[in-house]
Amino acid sequence: MTSRFQFRGYVAVLCAHALFLSLVTPGVAYGRSKGSLDWENVKRLSEGSSVIVTLFSGERYAGKVKGAVTDVQLPLTTKAASMSIQRRDIKTIMTVKPTLANPGLYVASGGLLLGSGGALASSLKQVSDLENGSLGTTAEKTGQHLEIAGIIVAAGGLAVYLLAGKPRMIYEGTPSQAGAVK
Image 1 (cartoon, rainbow, N blue to C red):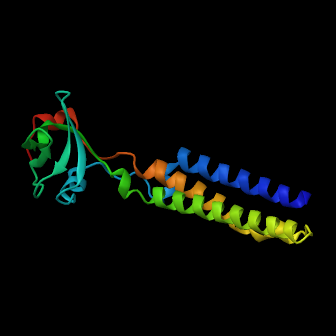
Image 2 (image 1 turned 135 degrees about the vertical axis):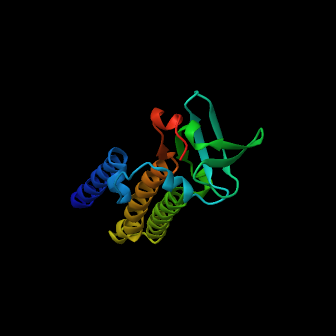
């Protein structure tokens, strides 16, 4: 019985380490390195992509790309209006994934359901054994594997949920580009 609790302790520590590492090193967690922050990234945006645009003047706009991005401007639709922002005026552009499109939310929910199902199966087996007048060791193992799998899946899903919904910078202009038109 002690080894079972030790195993659960090891699994809990492993999940905690995995979650911590994914939060500290998001580039490693997603398997990518920080790429260049040039205008080519902006030109690859599809229509309807959610972005946050910060201008050199300090203004900030949150909206969706409307139409094709050209070499000199970004067409944007915000809640207030549609506009076309000149490239030379843009300091940064960040992409934003909506929370509901975040797969981590669904993975974490599935892990919680899996762990709950394991706990329920284990409890039902123990109640059944008590009603039959015997309390064997099989009740301990009935839902144990589902509980452990649920904990692992829920921890992984939580890590993905926390990381995938964050804005990611795709473009950073320099003050020298503010006066130059390409």
